[in-house]
Image (cartoon, rainbow, N blue to C red; front, side, top):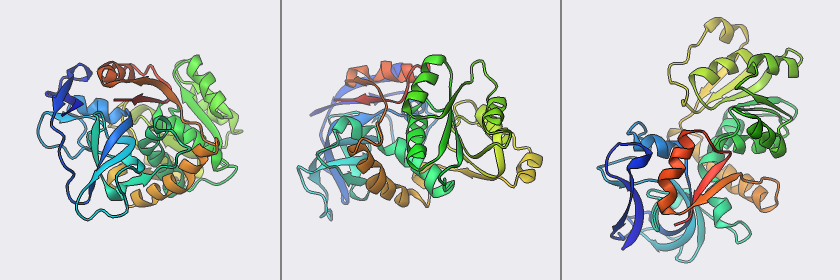
Length: 325
């Protein structure tokens, strides 16, 4: 038997329950891992309301969590490259539990010099950031990059990755404490969108030229800002919808600036495998070398998952919350 954080109904973050359930064997092609740490994402929160379907859900109840780091406990039929005892990190199903399951093709070996806690913060945030910045926008050294907003898990990851790629980062947040943290993480400029005009500030910082790359992490409101702040021949990558899904697209602005817009859904993207390669070959080594410092807001146990999701809903965090079963 094992403990797992599950939802039995779509009642929001307070619907999370800690259950004792049977430990199942891995399916063919799968790996069962002993979870040492797991990352919480906005998609986990949306799942508690029934508004996110990226899990490949079946029936209620089911276990929350999509990313984890841990040790291989058992392997399914056909798995040869991963063996019990190996340290791994990657996408899994049922991460908020003592045991979780992942496809062997989506789990990466983890060296001893990267802790499970740090590793668990990487997959979704850095897969998204890598896909956006490298495999879509193709950020070049010296380019201005707007990360809007920049204080969440993906935003803080994108800030550090863009800096590693040589980009000049402008990041946004909703209060002065978060703005200060973004500057500490390496943003050249940070904007408090609670009382500053994001577009006007971007235009001032870039001598009215705009940014070459803009990451829209929240949808309706932030997408409009990104479109107004983009430079000629700029690229916008949209990956989130927390401020709304019905963003307007003024074609005059789009056409007049020869802008390119990418929308990404991580799991259903042709660049997913390439992004896994970026995580393995660039991000994890950079973490080991201290060039990237994952931003951990808080560490909780399974009983703390519900409160952590509420904290995320209130946007009262910087970076990632990690679950240690």
